[in-house]
Image (cartoon, rainbow, N blue to C red; front, side, top):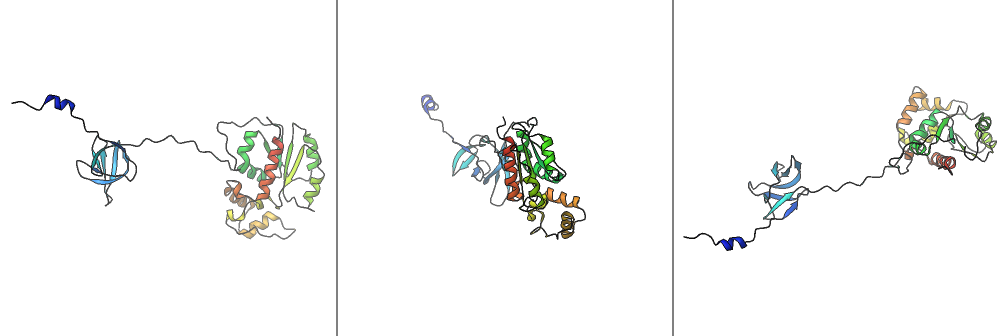
Length: 268
């Protein structure tokens, strides 16, 4: 004659169904179909389950729709934590400074012997030099270095750094460099005959650079030894394989770092 006790119904506790993040590889069962599988992703708001046979099915994330260890749960898509911006490392190994534009060129300069030297320096240290506002200029060799330095008129606010190839004791280059004594000029170099040789040979697929007899043009000798037709082709091949300081020899790295420090010392 009478239905369920109204007061009893009012006080009956509602069943609490826990919410669980649908993390990858979590194994659950769809309560309606009995399909059991591991979470492998999401598509159009539904969770994708894959069973042990590799079959996949999509299920909507409705409340209490899944069983976890035999108990009803509500699956939810995990919240993705905001990714921290990763530090970008420049080709020279420096930490890139975000949001900093290249500065207007300063009066100080870095000179290198030729266009190949300039291209290699740009490839590795270009980001650093743009932030510092330092321009790299190629020379046509260093035979007239002393006169060109005098014409540049170095000063404390107009420093000059010079990178020289084959700077070894007793060489023609070492005698030319010894004549440059201005305190606002720093000349450094590397022991390699040409900037090509400062690139690690294994980067271009060779164990070592060939030895070219004295009197024979070095670049042409290298091309012949490696079976390359023209120096321009060889240079493109070399430069293509250089992407960071790890691709060149330590003496070149040390010399360039010294030059950059010298020409930027005291700059704002």
